Amino acid sequence: MAKAYSNDLRERVIKNYESGISKKEILDIFIISLDTLNRWIRKYKETGSIEPYKRTKYRTKKFSDEALLEHVLKNPSATLEERAMFFSVKHQSVYTRMKALWITRKKRFFSMKKEMRRKEMSSPLR
Image (cartoon, one colour):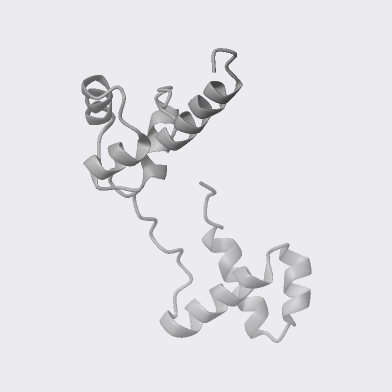
């Protein structure tokens, strides 16, 4: 995550803005984006402060890596959707966590069924 701009820079930008320098000139001088400038001005007008907002910590995980590993060992044939229902999360969350742990996943049952049908159709024993 990127660091916040320094308070010194924020003060100089606001002082220049209050002295009547145009926003375009401020952007060229300090090489910041228009959104950043507008956000600083709005915060200064609302609160009188230019301090950066306190960063929040990451959200807590709804399930731990250990719980996922345990579930995979107990239910090796479960699909992502089944695992997601077990942990009450979206299947993308389970997929991302499994990918980070280098655990391969079971493909959808529908695609496996379809592939089996293709093999049966092309089988010479038919």
